[in-house]
Image (spheres, rainbow, N blue to C red):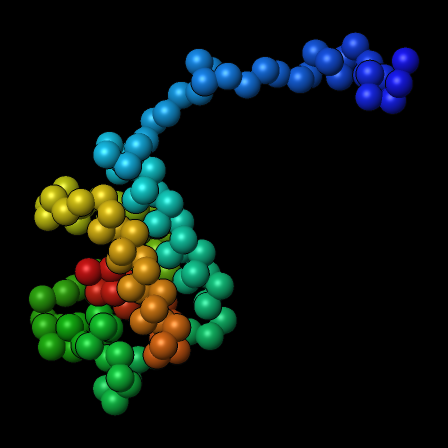
Length: 144
């Protein structure tokens, strides 16, 4: 018996054959799994936001990304929001919050699933080139 054939019985049972018949495809380029794409993009956005959490800062009027901040709209239309709504807008979003927001956009606008990925690319480019941070007050406008 040589070294290659020296397998125990339990190791041989753990090995599984791989064949095309046992492979289940739930998503293709022509028929993508929109739910999985939205969930993955939401997870990436949330992870990026958590990574930058220690560096979060208030967005001032003279900040170059002030137009992407929800604070701008809160100041302009403050009378339309009660205190609970303002606190919700400023709270750190969960993965489910981001996913639900993206899902609502997808359902309302009916854009292609690839737009979720393109949105993520644009967010990454914008934050990389401007040193902007993903924060509770700007993630929704940036996704839009």
